[in-house]
Figure (cartoon, rainbow, N blue to C red):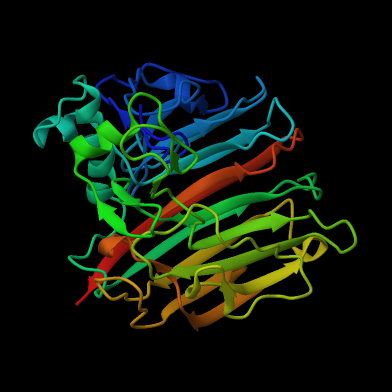
Length: 387
């Protein structure tokens, strides 16, 4: 099977119709609304495809959630009634301490996409490995430059509503730009990087030998494989330090290495040592920056707040190991009334030129059993390659 936790992606069938459901208040439970099939997902995942005016999104759920958890959508676009204009996420972990997520992502492919490119969605595991790589190479919602030394830019805008009773004692991400790794990149015990073929990856990881970034047994025993790692740009809430007030924060990361370990450089946005170009275990290659934060009590809960992101990702040397240019974050929160951010610094991941993609929803890394209620509307995005 595929390495556990390496990638959480949805391969979904969107053949089923979706015009025969009516709900009195207009809200529709999204995941149950589409008859979907999935190939490379954890057993407790549910998936659905949701169309917005600018991009299609796939809904992803992981972890053990309570029955209270749900994703509902509202259709209200006057020119196209099949398009979603509002999302309502309710995430509640059923097991304390176990990370959970309920998100919508613009990086996915359908079974029809795979078939058009010669990949059999119902074929052997080797085809499924190739399909996983295909997702990150070809997802339509993010740029893929020909090389890591070509810059890309992405704009994302939406309004987000956090209720007045949003839990202050929580750790959660409510908007993230996620990397696009090649899971066929391995590192041996001597630190040498190897790009395996799909067949070699299959041989290394079967049966059940790949888990939490390490191969156990077989000819690749002790080797590490490339996982997702920290997202290079996030907006979220942090309250793990009880001695200081909880905060909302924007955190940026950069890593110019071809092989990026899963979790090298932790950082708590509540720390008094707010990072500025912090050097991590990866040395000069891996950096984390605190871009912006505000006390939990200063954020406007109970009302719609607009987010307008314009992000330019750093350029990296194709061979890895060097950052060629700074990235840029321009972000207006509530039109600038909450935050007017213009930040420059190292930003992104090498990932052979594949730019990060965006996810809305809630990711809870701590398994808080309190419910998270987050709503979004007027979602829009675009990207371009900067030659």
